[in-house]
Image (cartoon, rainbow, N blue to C red; front, side, top):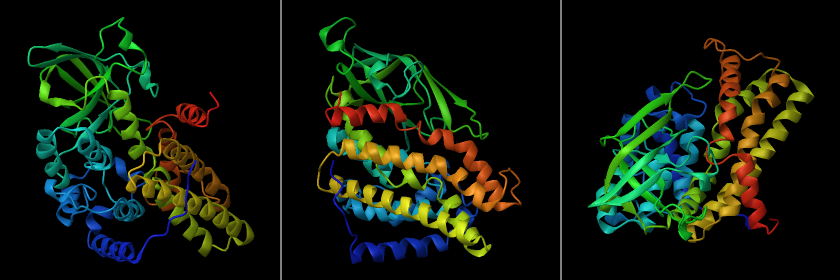
Length: 382
């Protein structure tokens, strides 16, 4: 695996200062100081980011994008997450749908969708996981069959974040006839751009342990999708999804979802006279976070170079989400504070929210077991 050290240049430092100045003026959007802020949808905030040119930053200018580097985008995303900004509305479209459309979409698809994404007006959900398949994408059963003028899709997806908010979902389906040679587990799949307001689509939110309902189920009953909404080549779905997951798994959100707890917890330890145990905790957690950040930056550099770092992205996601999940317990003892839900007790509330949210960190984007399987294959161990 390749994790070449990478240092950000002066241009990105100037951009970071610009983002911080912008965020200092957005206190109404930031007053929540959210944990897991990329699950909080505020379309008005997304449109503000679009006006600043901070969505679709790596997309070409001909489609309204910024024509900027992955490292510049990395800096903007890092600052937004550290501030707890509510970026959930545009998150998927910016992080992975836009780059995927650029790589595999038709010119008509690019011209229609990309400018809307860049403006913070067009939101996408991810249509991968299904009931009884979870992170094992090769086990999906949702099927698309050719009909006159397009396709008919029947099946269902689950754990589809923001499906109640988004207009579109990028849907992975089986398109090879049952029993054909191409019906192999990793073959015969295709991706479609599905309008969630189409006839035959039912969306149902799933309330989670933390009382949130951004997870959804999608039920598809003979849903018609026109031919021009097939993304890429028929049967190329698996390769496209692997490319998409490299964008999804390696970003700073994989270790900054819990940053409000990290930042405020370490500040509390510094000012509360915890002595040696506080210093040890701060040093250990800060060192882990900095290592994860360097690994994630390295992957951003590889994406900028046009590479597809699937294995590197998988290990960043695995180590990052493990760090996030362990953070609450790592701080709970030294802080000597019990978790709760009382918003008046900030550290107690942050601990409680983190504990309720933490199980999802290692599920979304591929479970720990799936990621370790990918790494084993990449290293030639299976």
